[in-house]
Amino acid sequence: MSGGATVRAVSGASPWLVTLRDELGHEWLADEPPANGGGERGPTPHQLLLSSLGACTVMTLRMYAARKDWQLRAVEVELRFNPHGPPPGDGSLIERRITLEGTLDAEQRARLLELANKCPIHRVLTGEVHIATSLTPPP
Image (tube, rainbow, N blue to C red):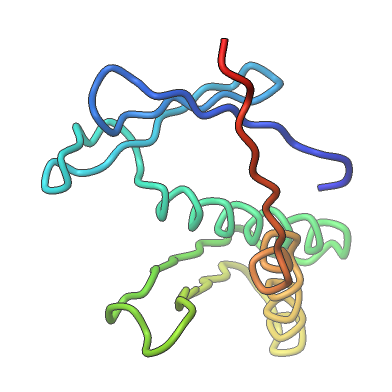
């Protein structure tokens, strides 16, 4: 995404409930499952991370196929975060499985796989990320 995106995360009434809002007025929730003390009113932070990669992958592939006038009817992306537990050492593993529906030849399918690995969120997650954190002054 060029420019910037802004999201605010605000604590909610229950222990782990978070309301998320963007600059366009969209609003959604994040929470934890009851086993972790949450109310399960929204996806977990890890699920939100996976949803960003999944949405970006689907959008990227559909946009490219439409531009090329390829017969791609649907894209499904299944994502799993550390499916076998945390990997040894530092880091995490995201498994991504893509299902393409449509009349596509082997070359088109290979190109779409290549593009999945170049979608903007994939690039963010596999690139170097810097997070500048600060506290606002007390009221």
